[in-house]
Image (cartoon, rainbow, N blue to C red; front, side):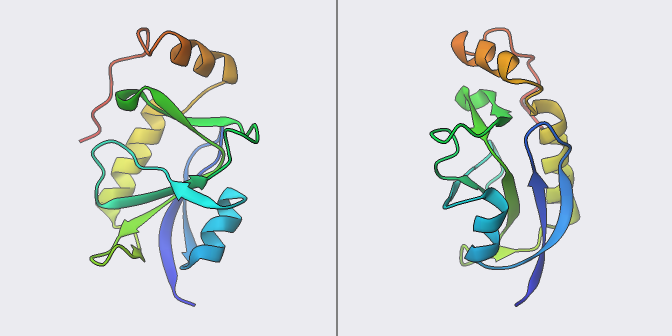
Length: 131
């Protein structure tokens, strides 16, 4: 199986650049279940995946998406978007954008996340753009 460069982000931890096997089974193993798209604003060249039942199963909050007034829960994995919609290695520029986004928008604790969601992100810092 081919290896690809990906970024994995676990709740309350710093994102990591890792080499993973390409394929559905690897993505499911990383997120701990069935996968669902975990897009990030303005990153059409990147595919993101999370656990489809992460919120229902009580997984910890991970990353804010204030532009969409929500958060992603549980472990996340991001890969490059190939020309046919397939998963490919991330390039250096994509990795840099992802790391900046995670540095700016990682959830620090559940209470903080709950407050932002309940107040419709009115008190959230205004640092959405990572371009």
